[in-house]
Length: 196
Image (cartoon, rainbow, N blue to C red; front, side, top):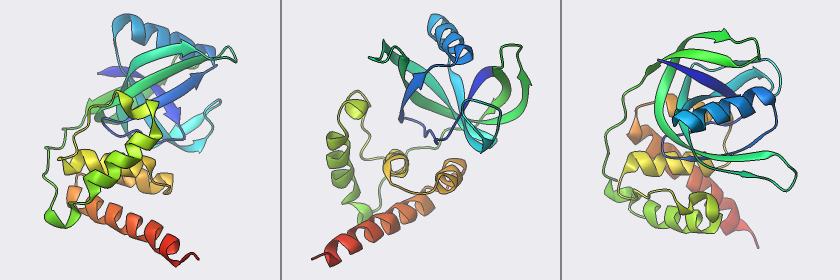
C-alpha cells in the first residue's frame, strides 16, 4: 500500500484528532487529492529535521483521514483529520514537488481491552478533560470502557516527551500504557496537592 507521508512534530494515535494548518503547496495538493478520493495520508513523527524542510522520521505512524477543512482568518488552509490504523514504513520515494510517498504495511489493530478495576476513575477524569478541550473532541466517538482507547487519549493530551509518546504508539502492551498513564496522573496531582 502506498500513501503520501506527512512528517510532523506530533504523534497521532488511532482514534485521535489531528488539527493542521497547511501552507506548503505540496501538502495543499496532497490534502486536495486525499479529499477528492477520500484517501488517508500517513503521519510520522520527525526524528530529525523540520516540518517545512527535509526530515527523517520514525518508521511507525498512523494513517489520518480528513474529516473537516476550512480557510483560516490568516488565509491558511485548516484541516482536521482523525487517526485510523497504525502502519510501518517500508520504503519512501520523493516526488518532484517534494512530497514523500511511503510504501507501508498496516499493523493490526489492538483489540478492545476492559479497564481493570484499579483504573476505574480514568474514564471520569478523561471525560471531563475532553469536555474542557471543546470542539476538537466534540465529534470523536468516545469509548470510555476500552483501555486501549482511554490510554491513547491520555497519552495524546498529557505533556510528555514525543519520544515516549512514540514508544507508546509502537507498543501493543495496553497494561504497560495504563501503568504509565496512572504514574503520569499521579505526578501531575502530587505537585498540585503540595501547592499552598
